[in-house]
Length: 389
Image (tube, rainbow, N blue to C red; front, side, top):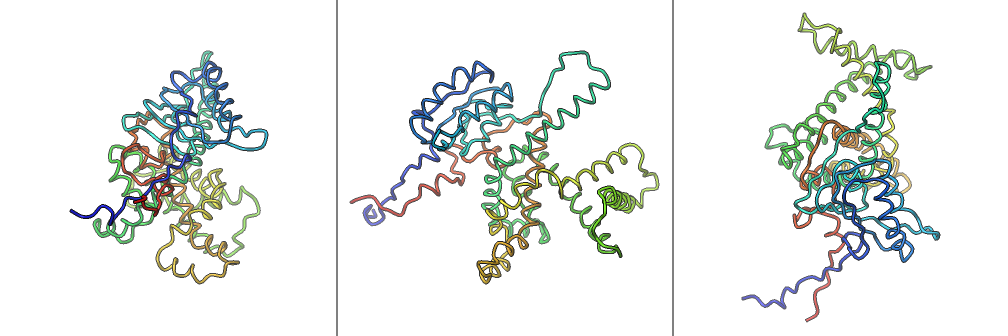
């Protein structure tokens, strides 16, 4: 039997930023509404004013008012008079549905117990008056805008988790390409295949985001080719001139895509697809989702480089490194980010019940208790210091 002193165990120093703490915890259960705020606010204020140690929000709720959920989050994250803000650890103990699922994902560190159930879905509204054709159209626009806002909020809070999943998965991409006999797979296609293998039950969600990525990539390539052929300046004098150019490109692209189908035309669904493609192109380059891209490049750009780029990065002067990294990784970061935004948008459609494992691999959770999945807590608590003999 080997001598235990020859290989002493490592000391793990618990890090409160990644650990649930019922002593500084509040418990969210039942429907989220004004009674929720009335019950939880006094205790939250007691904790906040005592010190700035992390707070824990335990969640077992089917959701409720989005507005009251937002107010609860603001109270939990409100700065003290000295400007200190408590880190927020969210823990799904049972059900985290609807607005409660959003709260779970918005934690600085989000944890789920193995038996938890997590539900994301689109905004719901029951009109309080008779619905007319005009009001129905207005409600549809309002719901779409609310779903878009919810999707971007979810993606923004969970971005670091998704990119961490990408970093973990990237070590398997070479083997994945070889197994599929597809060496040309893009980073987005690689992470999509990886996630599909981890969470096959939500494959349609991933496939939907991947299909959108592929279609958009083809359109982007076609538009860029047409742009280079322009003899005039690539700059457009007005937005309308730019939009006309894009519509012409999309129309020509669609005709080429269906050139062998003599019965195809722009009527019906094809005309709607043209409108959706136009909106997607504008959104990809100019949409509100682009706001955090520079920050994502600074944080994750070096982790999406290929080996040759990593070697080239080592030779860059410090004063030039940020610009070089933006040029080398910017488009790849943008594509990965847009893929994740697409997943979050699809989560706002229909009923999407997720297990903790599925939510973890999609980038919506940091840790599933007892799973052994890679997580920041293990990295933060790792210590080379052996126990005393």
